[in-house]
Length: 359
Image 1 (cartoon, rainbow, N blue to C red):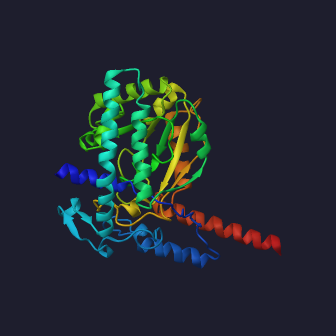
Image 2 (spheres, rainbow, N blue to C red):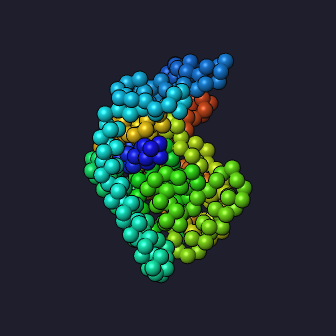
Image 3 (cartoon, one colour):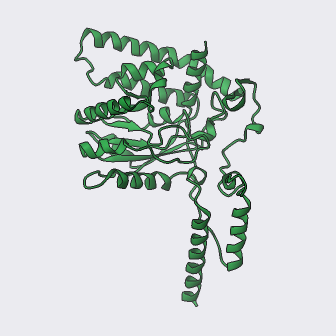
């Protein structure tokens, strides 16, 4: 029963929605006093004794789509403490959509498994098998009125025929079905092993021969590298979340090492993907989405970054910069205070030079 609940939870996640991307406007400082005021404001939001940075929680990096936990009318709650999960009225509606769509998806996978057993050459890369998951994701999102907005170099993905590495930020369970709305070619997820136990989702991952990794197991990491390189050499793209886990507050975290070495090894391009506002639609403390995603969710496809002649570290930095460039401001890493002040002074200097030039 618990597994079924968590499965529905994931399916509900699939409710991505069009998004309005927020682009930081930068510090609008026009005088030395305003710079000092900003510094005072920023500093006041950092607890010196604990080192806790509250700038993102106090309006400086606030996303209007995020609903605070205390403002959600929870119908019931599961577990307690940090592991507590809430369900509101919208979450119940989404769970019903999951109950309708998941059995159809599962039946399709089981039928294709029988065909693959009867003829190993029927679907060697499990392209047809994986497409059932993409169809489910899109149907689920459409039925939930939560299809994401797509932007950027979408045609590249539609037309690209060959191996590459897709990488995206990871802030919610919704990210997986959301990326499935745009990635048409067959690809293989690099996913944490525990998802194999989730009904439907685990069925898709195992039956589709996706790469499952146990991050605390060194041998599993080596096996992941070997399997990943193997798929790339077969011409099959990979999809991964370089942060290694979901961000609880939506902000982009540091990347784990090793992922980009596969791109270097096989000399394949890397396609960064920015996913916006999934953490607002389905936050970490909810079992299902707490609101629809219409006008909130979006996916931006960046131009390819070529691996040839670049190190893992260089690729990591380029990919990170690309992803950040299209994220809402509350999903970007909070910059250090020193950087904020330097940028403010530079902004003031540029403003003065612009005024003097006009005079």
